[in-house]
Image (cartoon, rainbow, N blue to C red):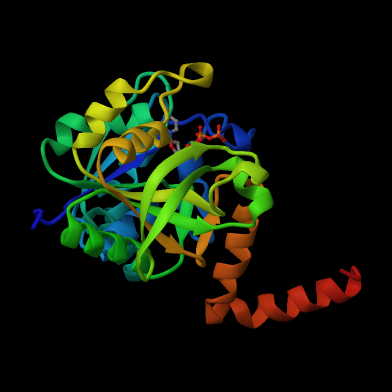
Length: 293
Ligand code: UTP
């Protein structure tokens, strides 16, 4: 049985071009969803699934990502002086969520290249990769399920979301064989297929449990468009030569790296908070009526 997975790698060195100009000088991963930055949800999810070591892949101008999970003595002293104990507890708890490390990706050469930056840190252990623009609202159920499958089978496990077939050309798409329940075996991966050629309506989404074999596969991947090294291509290579599993899920994901889904996440998460829902619910109902939506 493989050793317990401890490390969550969070690639956060991309340029965030789908959310410009908000992301020109501010990391996309620090954009707030309700009352906390997107990356905080992902670190909380990792901690809830039992991962206590976090490696954030950052780049120039993204110091805020590491700072957010560090202690901040001046702020803590000020909150204490003002008697703001709730806020003080929150900022201290943030620094205690997990051991957070950072590593730099010098150039944004793709998700696969960002994951390769984690090789020295993870060594010969299996690890999880969590994309911070995929926000999961599921009490870490998906990640827990994937980690459980990895503990049982020892092979990589990739999250697969059922999407409308017309949307599949935006994603990596696997050919699959059923195994049991949400667990499937991936036999081939096709990057951004036309809907009519797609082998399934499942999309590779931002949660992966990987073995160190992925680093050798990444080293063999040829750069694609714009010189980018794609993680999907490395997974395709692993599926050709060995076993790669998928874990199918349907609900609970927001792509907060795009303005529309970010807005949807803000509204739906707010409606789950009783103190906000009490006013927001009637406001939305009234808005829909007034605008004839
Ligand atoms: P995305 O493709 O969604 O992020 O990558 P991006 O490139 O920043 O965004 P757009 O498409 O230009 O709007 C998924 C995750 O992988 C990270 C990103 O920061 C994001 O969290 N990433 C991507 C890297 O760390 N390095 C890269 O070279 C590319």
